[in-house]
Amino acid sequence: MSRKHLAASLVALGLSTAVHAQGQRYFVSGAVGVAGGRLDGPYHEVYRDGGHDATGAVRVGAMWQDELGWGVEAGYVDLGTASEQYVVYPANVTTDVRVRGLLVGGNLSYRFDAPWYLSARGGWLHAWTDRRTRVDGPSVAGDPSISASGNGWYLGVGGGYDINEQLSIGLHEDLYRIRASGGGARFSGYRETVTLQAEYRY
Image (tube, rainbow, N blue to C red; front, side, top):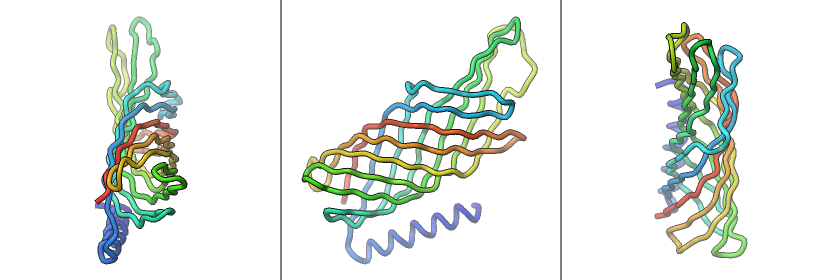
């Protein structure tokens, strides 16, 4: 485990312990939706997705909740796949870059007119990119696959409805800054998601 991973884990553990000591609440949430964005690749190529690729995320955390609430969160997000298509005569080449990540951050919520709420979140993102190339036709010289990883950040806003004291459902929009390197390659860019999220508090 790297020093950054260890530090993030210790911070999350310490905050979670403090919340438990005060008898506050924990939460778990799941989200599904669509992703889009642009990534710049190692050979000046550009990978795009028009916002129709599937995305999903799982978050867990602890919160201090009142009319204005705040908390800490950690989770996993699958940011879908961006692609590039081109021709290396006589072959058609498609290159896909799949992006996933771990995140650690904080969140705020404001219940301005119960049961409705607004929320914001942000923090650190460690992303993995997996580049895969498919060739329709004769073989083409080049790297069939490249894996890379690196640190970035994420920000998001949303809103929703409290079904009861434990369960909420909402719509969220998040922006993820991707930076990854490995195998002699670098990837950078953004992925945007719009998701429907369900959160359970206990």
